[in-house]
Image (cartoon, rainbow, N blue to C red):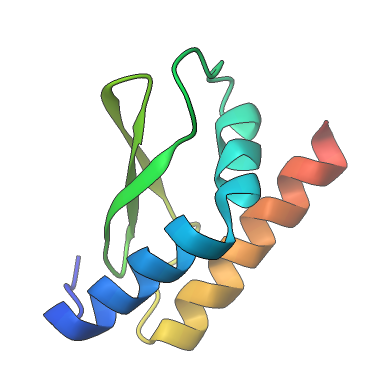
Length: 88
């Protein structure tokens, strides 16, 4: 697992928490997690996956393959959202 620099990680997390809460809800649905307490919140992201706070607990979701750039992370997150929409 590779960490992104702090500024890049912060930007990706802020973007997800501000603009893509619906996608994070979809990720929960995809992984069989029922939302009981408010919306999920992204906490961390790295080349291997990301962590969200869901129902007061940390949920780790790994990407299918390592992401070496923010663009690859964006593509992986969009792919997960698409997979969730298609499955549910």
